[in-house]
Image (tube, rainbow, N blue to C red; front, side, top):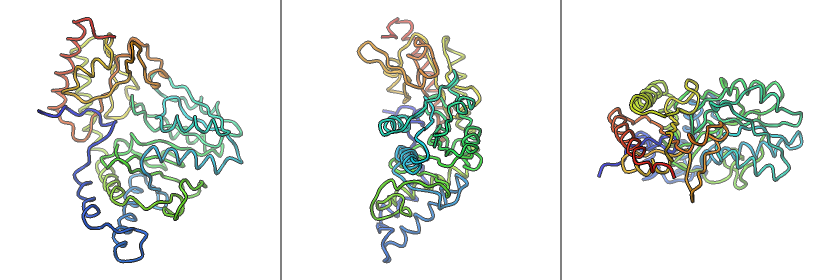
Length: 385
């Protein structure tokens, strides 16, 4: 049995072969604790230091500004909770967008239960945050703005540099979740003008369970995890050397191949979209048509339910849904709701995301399967619950 064509790279990525090779010594022989003063700790310590430079190379920052974490979720938690705690005396207001990943939305809801106020900015029909809305939301007590670099569902890229410039003029810290953008489009922190930025290893062809947070050197933040004082005292716990090394190699590969990889992913995505548009009616492409990730396609199929279509193509295509059906009710994603996508379109939304290893042959197979399945479901009249 052949594996399904993988078109869910925004969900997670496979390990790059180079990443696996870089990790092997720390799986097989270099088991030492990088905090140890003896011989066994030397190679792991040097590896962690080298990785910090690889990560900083991708982001255009100094190595001292890289904090290793367990992934994008922890990086987002650390960014908001640590900064909010350190700046609580200056204010208690946070600004974010209504289409953030749950790793931001749920943190903000937690903060609302602990003395903070949060403004959730609206987006337009393309999923874009308007910098004018950011400016209007700023208060004297605003201490932080967090807006994702690009949306994980529809791929829309936000005007981060413009929003960050607003924040800087008001003395407000700016954070951006770049889990979906690193390695696909440039993520140089000085160009984005951000003070904090999140990376997630498993979106970058590195392992799950590792990530990084860029924290500009002049930013004060509270200790996120107390203990023996690793990561310059900012996050205690013995370093996950194996996966940190994998993240470093992944960042190095991303920096070296960003133009080539981006062009390839976009070519595969466009091949998919053009093939579907040429063979199917009643399609709607969600998100901004130009300002979006090169690999991401959110497509609404009128008259279908996403769960039913995924079930139909699931043996041959791996994708994800923008809506789920439960007990005769349709649960539409908060992103599509915020974009005000009409329910009759939103309920039939799938996300396809291409990657470095996607081939034209895979796209052509996916087209054949999707087109046939949509036509069959529509002709049977039982496509929607």
